[in-house]
Image (cartoon, rainbow, N blue to C red; front, side):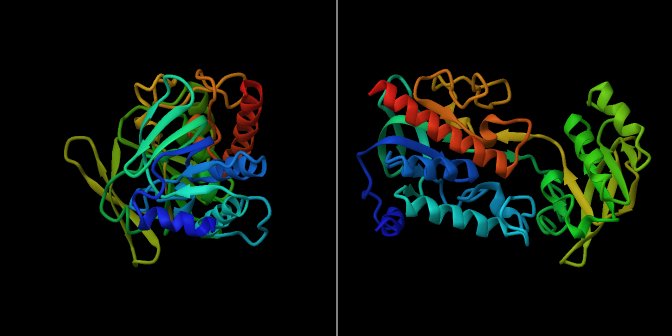
Length: 334
């Protein structure tokens, strides 16, 4: 019945109009589904708004674009990112989560019950869990899309240990602390790591620069940008890089892997002006190492509130926390 309801959201635009729920979860990644599993098993009958299929990333979040997930507990032979998210979705539905394949366009956090509006539904909720994630910034150049997940990635911690990158020349694009951290991590597996940065000076903190520069496996290529990715259509084999100095000289860098380390963008645009506290970069601010926000009954979990770890397993953990926090809030306010 629940599966039919989820499909019905796509077939009949008005089927869910005028809904009320104890907890509405916005998002579709590990944090959102972990929250949904805990909330539904807690008899809160949650509604999960997973976004549109046409979005990037699609329902399921960034993990759906990852071919092999090797560091999620319980899968010793790895698992496909899309497959993992489908399993989480099935588990959410099994325990009673109602899933809407719609996108939240606006929220009204003036007072509970809170109001959420999509193209097809008006939802009132006694509590809300924000789990919309953050998208890694990806640079636009020839071949960037073609070789995504075929040698190009945006998460060294997620993908750096894969066999395809071991004992190979690997490139990290970026000049901040994240780029230094990614490069240092990749030295555990790569033959050599090249850090390509468009400026002639790094933005990273001095301590991170010293650590990276003292590592013999890291080489810096400053004042350069990536012009194109080259390969056989199945796997990245080299990059054409271009100098940002006078002359714009080009050269070829042989590599089997390229990792973007140019920041993330939290999916919180729809929350701007809502009264929910966001930091200068748009991440939801939570308090006391928990998932509570500045608004009573509004919680946040996963990458939308995490600028440090950004892992599927940590998102899932905070999803559990958010559901338990919401349950306690409802008990105390009821």
